[in-house]
Image (cartoon, rainbow, N blue to C red; front, side):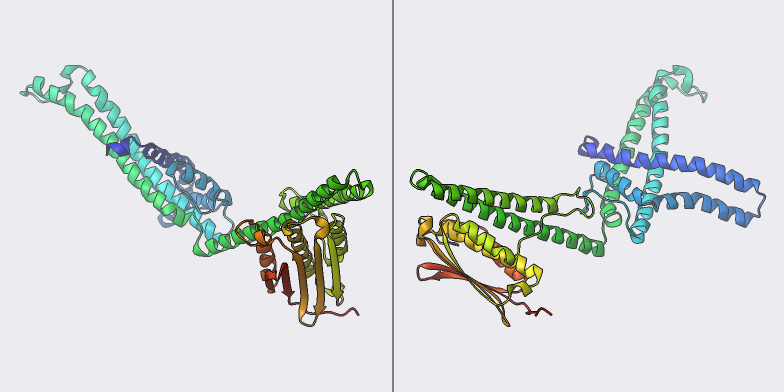
Length: 420
């Protein structure tokens, strides 16, 4: 019991109930005026009783149906009752079932708060009288003749303050019990229903999927650009004195790669910003039509890239073409990172084939066998990101060593369309 009395939550729950009592007092003032109007109307007894009942019940129910009441009650329940909802912060009522449950909770708050407020008024009022009673004139006890009040007065001086303290303690314990019951019921009444939990989970899943997609976009675009810039900077530094023309070309390629990375970064950040205006445009995402630019930027670092195409790649759906571009970009990034040799000794073969079986992307490149992609010595998320992209499009991925070269083969099922 001592723990309950010295615990802060005891008094916070009591305050929550007193807030309900304050609301009850406000409704009593309104109901008093309404009841007076009904009594002055000289109606029969049955309609009078019905109107009085409606005057008492309807105002709190109507107030509880307001959408904002759920939000306000949620804040009060979290801060005073110590309840944590699955939906944080608890928003306003969006549906009629939520409004009905909120009205039920609001009326429950009023009933329990009014009960505890009524008891608090009695306990503290009577307690104050009992505490000051022993300080009054000792002759106050001489109400019945032939009784020795010198003894009874002393006993009265003891039990009156004790009774006041016991009454306050009992009130706090009762408030704690009622508050605990309300805290148990709050998530079930104010919180989401099973159907709403499923909807909330679906929204969270969609948000996480979008964040994961944006993380892949940043990893692929910015990671590729940084790998190219690093490679080109190293090549320019090596030949700066002997081949200024090549160094200038490498520096120009670095500038191009950095600008492309900034454009991709601006695109992703534009998707993340919540304050975008409706209809605002972000930079369009690259597709397989931009592969030549990607290959030229890679070649500028000294890497030799051979591209083989078959089929009309312009007939690909936009979503497939965008994902295929990112897969090629990540494959080239891995070729740069894991070659383990000077750039001019790296030869990359890229094959893009579109036929009735779908789109085939095949990329082979030399690899440092001591730190091959996917080994434990050098980790990364590139291959995992490729698998995630391919899984969304229901394709297949094959990645592994073939001799001394790394082979990445991706098949994306897609219906071939013809231009009319």
